[in-house]
Amino acid sequence: EIVMTQSPATLSVSPGERATLSCRASQSVSSNLAWYQQKPAQAPRLLIYGASTRATGIPARFSGSGSGTEFTLTISGLQSEDFALYYCQHYNNWPPQYTFGQGTKLEIK
Amino acid sequence: QVQLVQSGAEVKKPGASVKVSCKASGYTFTSYYIHWVRQAPGQGLEWMGIINPSVSTTSYAQKFQGRVTMTRDTSTSTVYMELSSLRSEDTAVYFCARGASDIVVSQTTAEYFQHWGQGTLVTVSS
Image (cartoon, rainbow over all chains, first blue to last red; front, side, top):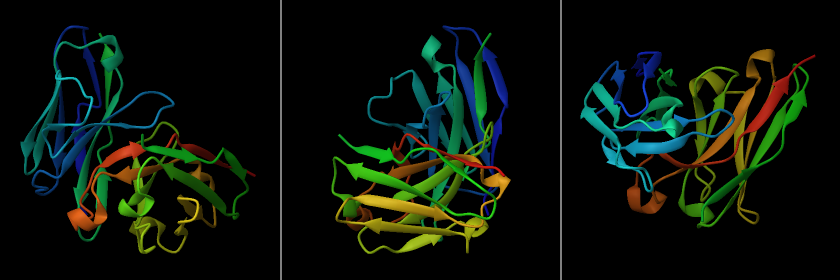
């Protein structure tokens, strides 16, 4: 089973600055990688899929990169509403596997 | 617009079963997979399984094999997730989520989760 590891666990950044979140897969997942944002008492929200494609309605300040085993979510010009939990997820065809990282909490510095 | 509306919170005793519903609207129900994901208090996201609403085939995460059953009712566009032999560790918010790709067009289960239900809190306590 593929293990997804996110770092850091908590990231403190000032509003207006850039945040860089990392996700590493224990083996290659090609570009089958998604990023989600979750706020307290809410369902996750899809941000990025295919490692680098923004989902519908997601602002351009969110960008994803990487392939294989190393992935990055970058949020430029942080706004107050961006402080939340972020999860990466690997998705696989067969057998169906959808493994999430443990999450990165992005907090206001 | 796509909507997934889940049933309300449940409180169950250890050893009991719980059945959570997820009613879909705004799209062709049988064209997209539905997944179930759970989140224990203060913890991360855990995938439980997938159902093809068209033919009712399922695949479950190994951890839940033998305890989880996913079914659907096409007449009401509703998917159900039943978890049995509940224990305190099953206390969590349970989400349904719709896959992004038309089942027939994509011919794959490798998909991300584009739409989510609001979540259902299941509390297991004696």
